[in-house]
Image 1 (cartoon, helix red, strand yellow):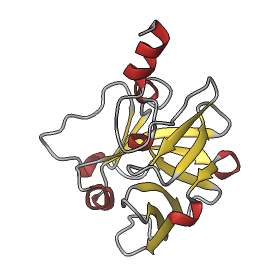
Image 2 (cartoon, helix red, strand yellow):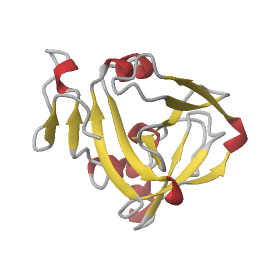
Image 3 (cartoon, helix red, strand yellow):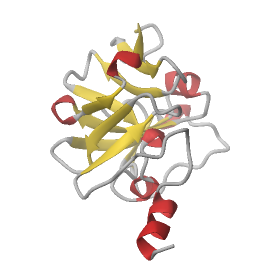
Length: 171
């Protein structure tokens, strides 16, 4: 195995059913677990707006975890490479702290939450770091810069070091 192939395997571990994700200097892919939906997104500004961890109770529930790791992309820079017609939506405002309507876009085959869109933040999609195919980006360009809803963080989970801490919504 060449050094390039070895590096690709380290950055693109087997995670899900497709292995056609890619990453360039300024753009990369995010794919659902079954591979039916794939997005391309910018890895730098102006299209990449921010990255953050959210501890709100809504994110607890929708991720079946204690937080969500997200990055915000301007919709003008988000591309649907495949599976746009495979996305199903679910919208609600009852449990959203801001009271805005949040629309969730899920793969209808495997259930992966690909992104969320808030009526209070038009023109932007809140995408999930865990769907990004290049795991190296999780540690570099997509490393969270903000942790929000820290007041809802469970006591056994320490806060992120070196990032802006916000008790409520940062956006």
